[in-house]
Image 1 (cartoon, rainbow, N blue to C red):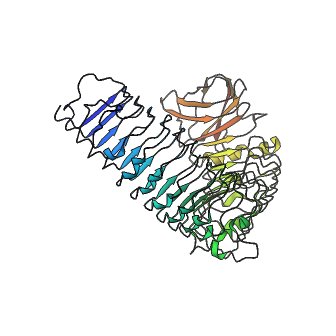
Image 2 (cartoon, one colour):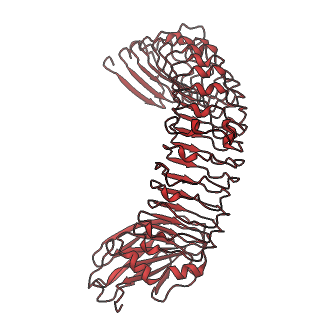
Length: 564
């Protein structure tokens, strides 16, 4: 086997001598290796990558046996193995990547880890019994990525952590530490810091504001944090801040500024590059800064679940156009949208779900693709929707206070309209034959979720089960605009994804699609002739679904002046 360079084994056992059989091997991956330790004669001197994931290995070498030096080894992957202790790392002088993820029996890291002068990436994720990191880890001057998330027994981070000045990414989420070391200020190259879910973390050291290269800061779920460092706005490089589910009540105070202070230091675009701000689930948050929209690089603002938030700052007409693409203010206390929201010309997604105090929407940005306002039970007024030429999804489910929706017939990009839970009077008024004729001319299928207490007379053919056949009139092609497929859930089960197909029995053409539908929910699908066409002489259409618990109703859409 002198020419063997790469060997992959899985769930196999090898017996006999290993001496000189792998002398030129460069890469060995052995999943579920059965050995408790490596054989003493296992010594592929040219090995560069050694991967032993999910192995039975407790220790790399048998006690009292001389360990080998792997001069060329650069990657060691022992993830999800039964390791109880790590090897003498001086035997791996060239190691660059060390992966011990999921080693749940591992209780300590050998002090010799500090000798790995070339180590770039160290992963200890999910080492649940690991109580401390050796101080020598701070000697890893080439280390760029340190992953210690979900090490739930870890009592503290090394005091001299800041000595790893090459570090660019630190994932320390899901720990139970009380504080961060002040030396963190020396991590001048740190780009990403993830502290998510450290529920016992009492504060962030003010020295964190010295991280001038920091672009991503995730402190979401640090539920014990009620303030943020006073100078956090001075991190000019910060692009993404996840501060969901914190205990802050006033974002101004939490940043250390009073309402009377000049917030330009924090919010002017030349001084902050924030693109993503997540403050969802901050249930005590009542106020957002007046100059919020001065974050002129902001693309995503997620304030969903900030239940005490009752107002957003207005947008001035002179405001520099924001690149804001997604705005989520679901489950807030808002009674109206901010004045001037129409100026958010880049906004694609607006989420307002369960804003139960929202009374009216006066204006909307013109380039929206998605509006979800599910459960806005107090909403009574919408603007005319005719300017929303790019709108693909409009979700107004359970907006029981709505009495009219103007401009639906001009939503030429619409694909999904959700009206479940709306007034049956409103639905009957909206879903007319004329609307279906207009929608069938848009050239794509449209799904409308709506209550169907009474089926219009012109939609006449009905069946219960997973298959039905529909006879076509003898002359149909000239006036035919499309089909209406209605699916009414009979409540036999909780509902699930349903696949369906429509087949022209004459031409054998089949169109397939799918939908999700809940118990006692109804769906109308408009299928235009551009997708499913018929010709004179075509006599029958066959509709088949994968859900027998549906009532299926089929109708045809014809030109307005047709005799059909």
